[in-house]
Image (tube, rainbow over all chains, first blue to last red; front, top):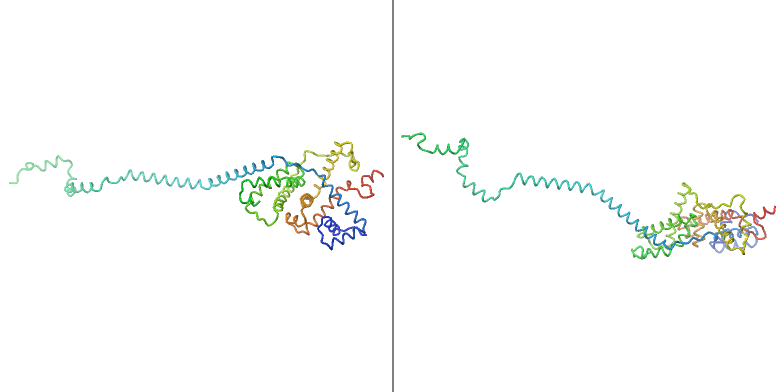
Length: 164
Length: 198
């Protein structure tokens, strides 16, 4: 019989793996019965497959789970630090700007308070206005007098003699 | 895994404990060294944890686990091709080393000798496995050591069942060729013995 071709080999291996449907499996079984070289091929494939059992079977270290959990914790910590750093980077300029505006506003308010202090009491202010109304009405005359003593002397009747 | 998804505090540790032996073995057979296998296995579990909210129990959890493992292992192997790692424990019997057929004879009286032969055979089989390309190697390991059928392997590797059938066929043929000196046919000497007699 002809040497197995690629399709034959695929079907043979699928048969060995139990992956062929019933009809195809019966075909392969029949050929294995009749074809010595096909049988030898199957045998060689099975042996090679069996040699994989000689591969070393690694022992999992006893602390594998703990080390995995530690690595997870470390990763989560790094991740939260990165987020914190990103948040800080994003918000820092805004914080600085806001603080600067507030500071400037505060300074301005303070300066305005000092420079333009509000009148102590409106009622007192109005009372003083009434009290000094006579002075305020004649202020345009008084501002030419240089001192109060001069004004008082002007008031003396003997300064310029009598009119009679 | 559903408990892990729902942030049950002990569930993840239990999951790791349950699956790490199998995962480690698969990784070890793929990458060929314990340290890298452990590192990759841990990374698989970390990815499982990070992706826990996306987990839907449509298929077996092991299928999902090994899908992640497949991606990581293939990346590691491809990266290794770009930056070859020289193994520290090079096993080389040298040009005048004993012929394979002679070493296959079991010395029942010498247990340490038997162990050494098995270790050497393990190394030879490991080398044969490493000669397969990454996808063939993955398919072989999943089929052999995880007992996955073609459909499951197809799901893990993102292939069709037909493609897996073809992949495994080529892989097993390549393995057979690489290990021909250790395969004894009925009534036929191995290639090494035939050369010896000549």
